[in-house]
Length: 414
Image (cartoon, rainbow, N blue to C red; front, side, top):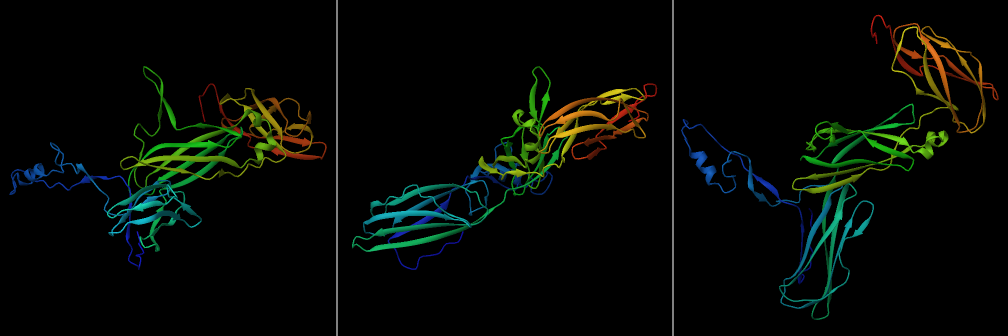
């Protein structure tokens, strides 16, 4: 913390102290075996040490608390608290004392004073005390500007300021990845790393979705016993050690009123924002909210073909059913024709060249199809072709999905 000293002698003295919680006192235990030269000397000294725990003197943690010896680190998302005291060091009565505290950041100047009214008078050896709080929302250099104005008993108006400079550091490194599923679902993977020098207790990590999505948290598992309960995948004590990374997973599904509007969902890039709450040391809380997370919207083209139903396993050379969903993602009406082309392993059952009829913008239709596979193993379903007769435009679909084909007489070959 840097302080600019006032050049003029003033009747009042300004003192500023950062308010932080104490830390547990630690000591370095020194032991030896009884047969060594010191004998029980080290043990006796530790038992007489008032900072050690009785009966557990060899533990590094003691029963005492240590007050902060320096300004310490301030991290983004924590609450900055400071005690401001103005003391009358003179033998005069000072009048109209006004204490103002501002916090200057790289982008704004904030007034942190609890009251902007002046104190009528301050007698000798008396003081004015104030405690300010501010949730830090920017990283980088911060300057606490404390200004004091007052009037002497002779009517002279005096004024002085002091500047306290400190750095706000980044506590967490957050990285996100998006995975787009075939069924309009979006999976979000959030990697959170503790880049401070002390452990963190992760109180909450949640995703606040945008207005078009509902979110399901995938960081809980069911524990079966006398009662079925949900438990965190990270255990009961959710601690994040320095430089450790933890991964959180969420599934977002379009709300029912938006699910069938293919054009709207296709253009949505804003997913939501992460809300992270943690505690450090003796319960000091920090909170971060990310900006709105954005993803690259999948490019479905004019027509989207997805699968609503497909079996996990099918028998070799036996017909099986699937249900395709065809969605018009364009802004024009289409007249569609479906062609089914056989591949080396996939053979379609039914008539190719079927007229599917007109499909208006944003509309969809569910189409049941039958096919069989002539090759064992994991096979890719391919060979569908849609033609818009209005524009004479053809859309081909390969690798729509995969299915495991087994021989009922030889077992699973996938």
